[in-house]
Length: 375
Image (cartoon, rainbow, N blue to C red):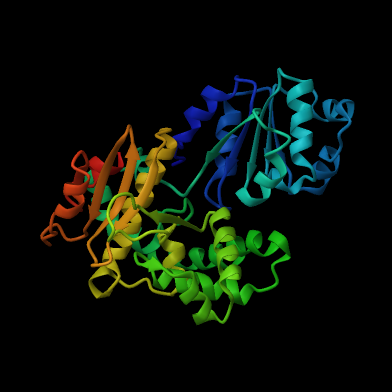
């Protein structure tokens, strides 16, 4: 079954607003499938794979007449992996300004690459969307909530890449190894002529083992024998290639609140588990709580992004180890969430936080109520 991605409708609604639609996402998350589903609704549209040399050569020109000849009578053009085109920002600007009736979608597997090439030429002329591995909300198209509940353990072990979800265990592991080895590094190592694949892999393993904990870039640098500036730069690149994302610490009123700290999570738990080669069942793991925390925060991120709910997100912790896993700030208010895999495990209400921020709302998210949080 082909799943319809939630962002599909939003993209369709914004196609006619005179702006280039930019869709970011890691390789293999389904960008090409999404583009071809959109094309089904536009018979006069054209799909162009910019990885192919003949298309790359034809598009690398700022001559508007040559571009028009290449596009022909298409009223929609989709440039898949558009970062392969030199000066893609200038070329898209020419198309938008010269042929305003042509609708344009460009996809890319690295926000780092595309942002550098697009930000100045397309100022005010573009809208950006992110596509991630399947969300739980999306797989509701095929499965009931009861069925998805029964699949939760496998989701925490193998993630939600479209080509992974619902595969047999051994097939899922082999495909994850393929994605992690051949596709994720392809973009990372190409950026800024990075020459240290060993450092990238060791850094990812270190971050995977620290899942759910605060990250000290100085400590990671010391562990890996690199200076902190290199570690920070590589972490930025890993973020821009949609492998990891970070939460910063929330600090406003209390002396004991931690400031300028980070927690790092993975955009796919299957990738994370592949990095440390741990696909064990949850009953024999010591990181189940961290997996659940990552899952809940990630699904919330997907929901907020796809439904265009814009907010600030943080974690909260004090020097005496009081903590809240996720803080959302929107509408002038704070919304606090704590995640626990075991519904029977008791969590103490964060009285100190609620006393300092009395207008805040607080929710514990576990397996019994997580649907209210991610959908």
